Length: 181
Image (tube, rainbow, N blue to C red; front, side):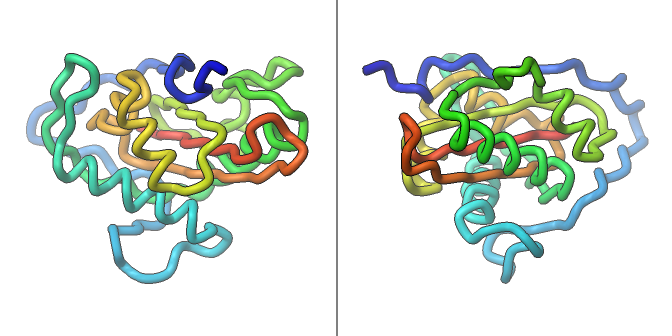
C-alpha cells in the first residue's frame, strides 16, 4: 500500500513582499509556545503541542530536505486560527474518510484558514495519516522533502496543529499542520 505521507504534495502560497533591511515584521497574532515551556494553550492537546515542540527542535538544528539545506530557523509560535483550521481539517478527513488538502466539497487550505480567522501573509499545509504518535508523524514529514521544506521554511512564523482519530477510517490517525507567514 502506498504510504500516504511520503508522496503527498505540499501546498505553497506566495509570501508578502520581503521586509526592507533594518525593519522587522510584526509577529503574527498567537500565543508563543517555546519548546518545553509548560502547558499547551487552551484547547491544544498534548499530542498537538508535542508536534510544535518537535518542529521547533528541528528548526533550531537546521535540516537537509531532499537536496536542499536549511540552516537554523526561528521557532514557530502557536496560532489559534491556524490551529482551529488544522484541527477541523483533521477531524473532517477522519470522519469522512478521505486524505487530501482539498475537501470533497472543494474547500482548500486557503478557504479553511481564512474562515477560521487567519489573515496573515503566506501559508502552507502539511497533512499526514496513519501514524499514532507525534514523533513518528514529524519524523515521516522530515523524511519527505516537500513536507520538510514547509517545516524548515524561515518565512513561516506561526503554526497550528490538528489531530483527529477516526477508528472506522482508512488510516485512523490524521494530522494537519497549517503554517503562517
